[in-house]
Length: 631
Image 1 (tube, rainbow, N blue to C red):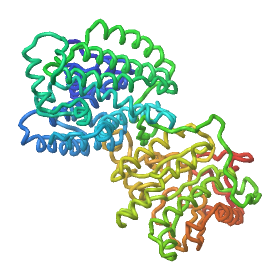
Image 2 (image 1 turned 45 degrees about the vertical axis):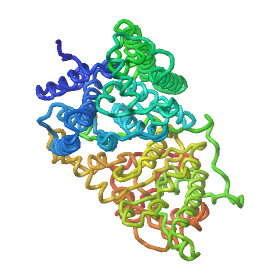
Image 3 (image 1 turned 90 degrees about the vertical axis):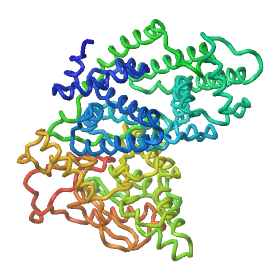
Image 4 (image 1 turned 90 degrees about the horizontal axis):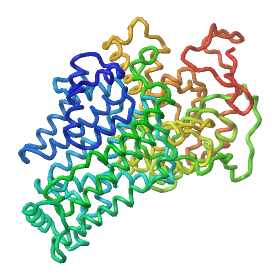
């Protein structure tokens, strides 16, 4: 077998041990006989080895969960998982698949949360869990498959390719993912039955008056029968045929989502359509196999497969040529490995092409008129006082957080109304995990209950998320990701949500990233400057905070953006957050415009040279103006 040396060269892989590791991944997924290896050839050569590593890791996880002595599966799975995390810390592995996966994640600076979620879902399946309803089955399907889709999408994001998808297509996207899961379940039916597993929803068996024992019996009868064919009328075998037909029909219905691909970059739309066409072909083979599906896996006809893939390869090759060249994170200037966003493929967008102006205040009040050059570019807010506001009124603290959500909405619109460029809201700190569970839920409701979505959906507001994915509920994590990527191309107000954020943690992670770059030889420690350090922060392009405003009467910054707020003006308001509205924001802005900012220089004189860590400030009316002069 000829090794794809040109692919490894395109990906910058020349170390023989790494080449060997990626080859092991490629061989594993090719021998598995699925469509992953074939569809990987629709991607640019530079991305293929990384995709092989991700696919191969998924195969290893499935094998560990499904094969061998059932009593030892969890121990083997946990040992592999623990070894992977150790390898990821060390940056190398003796196991070829883990070595390739570690190299992929470090080279492309991929987040670990998607893979961690897939590991957790797969481990939970080792005991052979059943899914009583379609809803339970879909939740499991999304937990496993969406996690791997997110990992692949994160790879694309690291290469500069993002996956926008409008909010109205969210359910269609979930159905498309579930359709692929149905195809996998049907193809794996014989293997699953042999292991004593039922992966389809139990309610669909009940609808056809079937039990697990009926499927096992039908499999034994099908094994004695050679070749495809229909079951005789009546009896369990006919019910099994009807069951297979029902699942095939549902998968075909859910695959029919052409609108999902309209807004993808052309090359990715080619890939998505090819995956869909291959899934339909697989369903054709499943249907043709009939009840024989219970004792052997259907095989895809080579000619029919190539009729789909050959034109797709040609279209993808042409389409990829029109995109920016793809390069791993390690090749970026200054050795920086910036955190790519964590796309999930299910992303919101405004409901109309023309953004709607900010909602006016209920009283009709208008903002003061300030000199544009005196306005801050970036305002960060510690939204404090929700719990005390509720306690004063004899209400549960969660009611304070709910009321605070309404204040947040009005303040955001007040910032949009005056043309503020950046607004950061401290929604949930890493220290907030110490609170009672019901209060944690109340704090996370700001994201979970669509308050942010309702605030930004029709307006020219770009949402960004700063914080850690670790520990966040999956629905909150997915919502943040959808908001961030669905609004990524907007040019108005940038709204940064600090959710599960800690300033010291951010600085420690940046230091760790610098250390990894230095150990790997990509960065000379002698050349670490403020600019280089800033490039390793979670949001390296976030401008410095000009005004840090805290409500609720306390006077501290509470670990919010310590790097960016080093020279921030501070403003404190006694009013508790639920009683705040845009008029209080405007008052804080008015206070800011009266201050003289010296930045360590003598009053009346400008500092020597620009701040090397702050991007240039756009000027002009309505844009927030240039940065206030340094006096």
